[in-house]
Image (tube, rainbow, N blue to C red; front, top):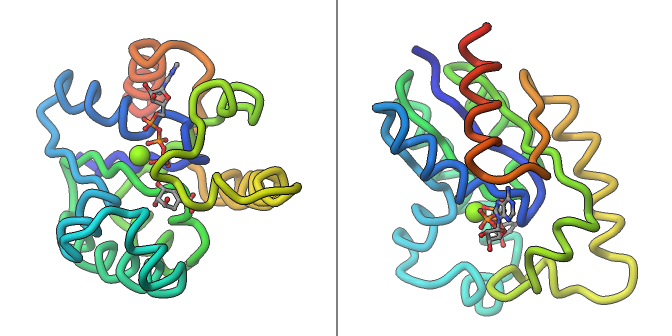
Length: 166
Ligand SMILES: Nc1ncnc2c1ncn2[C@@H]1O[C@H](COP(=O)(O)OP(=O)(O)OP(=O)(O)O)[C@@H](O)[C@H]1O
Ligand SMILES: O=C(O)C1=C[C@@H](O)[C@@H](O)[C@H](O)C1
Ligand SMILES: [Mg+2]
């Protein structure tokens, strides 16, 4: 009973689908963003604003290390930038199936406006560049890839069917 680790770009639906999965199967749900916010007693946006991205990544890595003790039976909803640190991915992959929720930037733009997501509010080509660079990383680490442009229920079904096939 490996963990199910959800990765993908901001707005791909990891948090939404994580909740659906948790209600479908008796796995415990952890969200790295929620754990970070709880640890710091602050919103993600204010951590970025007050302490900067470097500090945020440091806390994110602490949270991943703490999750290393969860060696099965959990759904882990990751922040979009979890792949920025390869040690995060090594830890998560040890006990988990990495599932990439793959979604076009066009769909993501339709879904979110960046509120509460500081890196999505950058101007110019920054988001496009980030998306391009991260796509390679998600692809590299994924054990399974699902089409996250379908509705959340369908995405959850795809994940269960792929993971159960092995
Ligand atoms: N499959 C889907 N189809 C349509 N809309 C969706 C889908 N999944 C999520 N959404 C909507 O897109 C928005 C972002 O979803 P969500 O917060 O789950 O993304 P996320 O991957 O967790 O993002 P982040 O990396 O920033 O935490 C929400 O408004 C949600 O309702
Ligand atoms: O893609 C990212 O780097 C981020 C995604 C969010 O889930 C949060 O973890 C934060 O806004 C950073
Ligand atoms: Mg999320």
